[in-house]
Image (cartoon, rainbow, N blue to C red; front, side, top):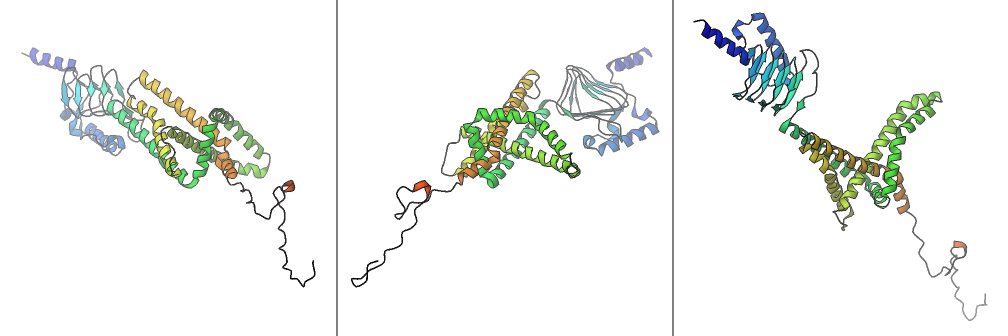
Length: 365
């Protein structure tokens, strides 16, 4: 008669879903787990950790071909997912392993363990948190729709940042930006080569600057300020060049209009969106392997070419100052009737004195 219960226990152990009952755990062990769970809930990764009553003890397996509702949680053991879990899964003191054919629609959290995906799928976030009191062991790893949403958020955040910075530059330094845009449009190849040379020579130039300052005691004290100023200057020139490249890209679709500033804003917005399209495709294909890598290479290449050409144009235009200086050149003096038709040596003739009125009785002068 005892063969039937023993066979049932053997089947449950083979499946892996027969954890030790919570009532059989020592009170001290439950208290320790409860404290660890309370500490984990205080972290961003453990805000949705269920109560200790929802945890089972020991290794736990979701069998293949089955669908269970979450959350599924185990303590002092690993959780093997071979079927489908609708919700979140948790493991304290063990690993969460998603095997081929296994699926977790929610998030997977391993406290004092690891989240391992062996051919399965996790729809939400995957987090592995270090022991209580230590820092988190690794960054959250995302897959599926969560990874796509995360990549799209980053892409749109960068687009918003570029547009805000660009609008500020148009508002306060529109003339300088227009000078760099004109330089890039008329001397693209030269600007691209100058941009590459600037990238190669930036670090040696900074080293030479520091060495030159190190020749004097006062210069040594100025090295930190010079480094900060150099970095800020490079960042400013690169930003101006990148915005100019986006504006040039927008000129392909935005034609000239009566309002120059409005056209500059429209060109910047359209050009920024065009340059962000490869990164948008990369965000949508983030779950792929080869496709995501190829799209990322294309996006990096387009961004690098645009930034390099813009950097070179900004250097050729001297940050836009060169065009401003040439545009405010003095206008030629207006010709008047009293000037000689052809001044000699470029000197305008002096005004002739007015003729004095004479009367018949006055002597001739």
